[in-house]
Length: 374
Figure 1 (tube, helix red, strand yellow):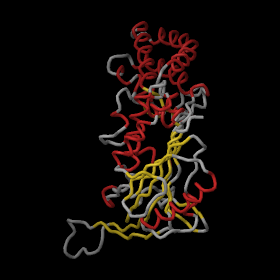
Figure 2 (cartoon, rainbow, N blue to C red):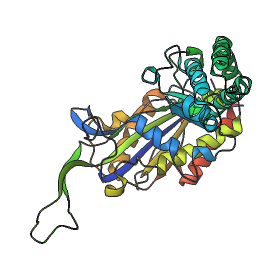
Figure 3 (spheres, rainbow, N blue to C red):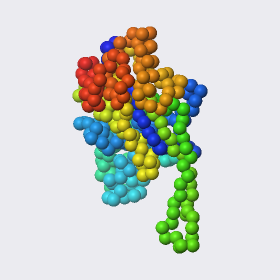
Figure 4 (cartoon, rainbow, N blue to C red):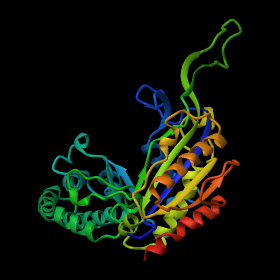
């Protein structure tokens, strides 16, 4: 196995007075660890903000990065949306039913029965061309479209599968990075080469119930008191996060395009360090950047450093880096896996066998890894 198949990214990021990720009751997500409750940010939350970030290092800025959309209404909005002003409504209804069944499975005609599915631009454009062809043949005759769509449906499903198998990025760049699951068509599944752990506080949870009011600006002088009284939860914490990229898997999903893989890793390092989950922007300004980024490249099975924080650590970046470094020394002595490391560190605590660098230098270093696997 090549020595640098896996890129591991560890980060410590501080936040104060925020509510980054909520559960179904509106409270901060939590996880018990080491006998203490910790505040948590789910991997889904982290990945979504990295995917949609409007940033100079956004994934969509990468040359050749096909777009993708995750929805139950891709056919209705992205495929047939452009035809609604020109095509007969009854004709479109016939086409819409069959296309949804091809894309979402036999029960796809019912929106409630559809899976929220990720489709890439190449798949959507193929469907749009097929829709345009069928609409041209049927004209305004809904009966003709009914027959055309029925006949197309028999072959369309297989043609759609063939097209996506032959496409370089069937699920767009998002699918190539974070995978895709299609229950109605297992062959359309894409294995994710980017593995993201739930981030958690290195210390016990620090939370507060925040009482707040809304005051009516037009209230009369004798109308005192708040117009609205509510409560929310706020948290503070230093979060440990962990990401693994299977570089061989990434190259495979990108059609062995090492240049694009290089840009992906370069931008991903920036996004992880700089992009924060965006809940309650207006009332908490939850913007922060990593206090420590540790990158490791190696060929052995990756391993999280979460165990370093099983016993709660003081919520200070310098002490957390020292605890992490001590655990790393123990792993190095026991396993001798010889990962190559680079670190960006805002503290004075040293990290063993790691070359120090700026975020730019870490990103550039990560970007060179795919070329070494060719």
